[in-house]
Amino acid sequence: MTLALCLIKCDYQSVKETLQSIRKVKGVLESHETSGPYDAILKVKADSQEELRSIVRNLGTISGVFAILTAIVYNVK
Image (cartoon, rainbow, N blue to C red; front, side):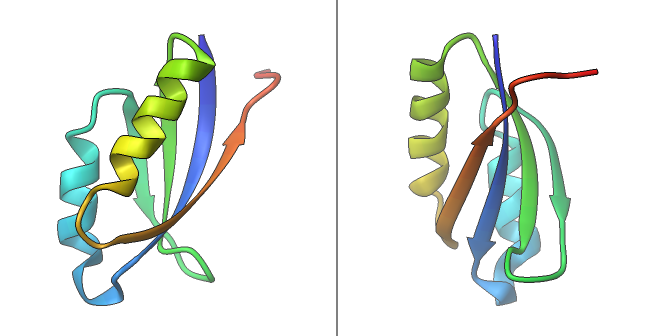
């Protein structure tokens, strides 16, 4: 299993609508609107890094998503 946190930059005028679309993507466990340079943070789970790559690419095709920064979680305590 691969767990990752994804920081999302999106169109500030449609953050809520963009997050609604993001929440429908298989593998997205949590999504939260945030302040600062990124508009949202996601918790994403995949069976492998290849599947994670596919999920992130899918997220990048969603209307309103401008940039994604992905950090793979190495250790959960």
